[in-house]
Image (cartoon, rainbow, N blue to C red):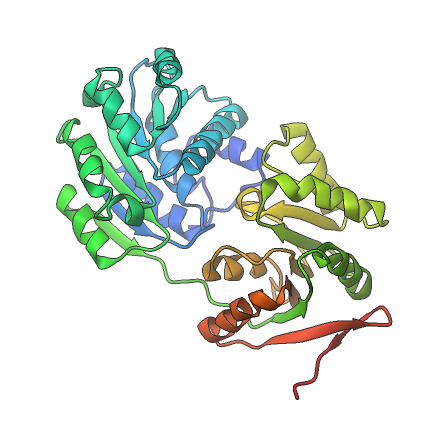
Length: 380
């Protein structure tokens, strides 16, 4: 099953996804959407960047009656950042699909009066941190008995010893026939046991970690932190990629890095979190047409993008975890073509490269720049 049509989603949702260049469901979406639509409880483990958010939001959109003023779905998340991120995905999908699903973000340590006011919009989906959500339920500002589906995002954190009591208390305020979904990048057995105890005969699946494509050559170059951008610029000139993705960890630095590359006569463009739809579309159109051959992005904004014919991936920042490395570099070397992944690392980050080698049983060769060329460093 390799299309959203086969998953029996509304045509407007499929069209909305296409506007964001999301055309093929990921494994977790393929596995999760059907049982969720069948109102089954689900426990799902899938790596970072695998499309878990849309795996539970698409069925929610499918089932929400936009004419209704009742709350339908509650998404619990452990951090402010994740709450905002999920809420942004909801708003973007609603706009792209022209499907008026209303949502509200609810977080602790934020003005509660303003949040109470936001609930007057009669949201279909509330995304929130468990403590603040529970406070508003107790104060009768959130009508928990209306909730049809509860999603526990980053379930390993929310079902840990520190957080599970609050989550359980939120769930207890809802009807017994509500649906419960737990998603996480990693699930310890204790979390699976805790989730199962809260659920009704859940569908449980753990997707295997992505394997590293053997058609990708893995390289790294050592640099000081201050000189990383200079190293990237020189690598691009030396390696002459046809099309390349440059990954940063911090969304707020994407435009600055792109501007520096353009200043040095590199045809770079970027997509970033606050970009408008027209800005995002122009960047992707320029990149796909070849007008720009370097696309700068973070893991977050690059997720779900269908990008073809990438010859290179550059990690200006090393990713936050080992699994994310596999996800990043897997964007090159597709359809039998060769690809190259280059990480620019400081001396302290060499240990990350060694961990990548051990975890994936691959060799990551060191390179250096000489006379405008990238040369493989010979082992001593």
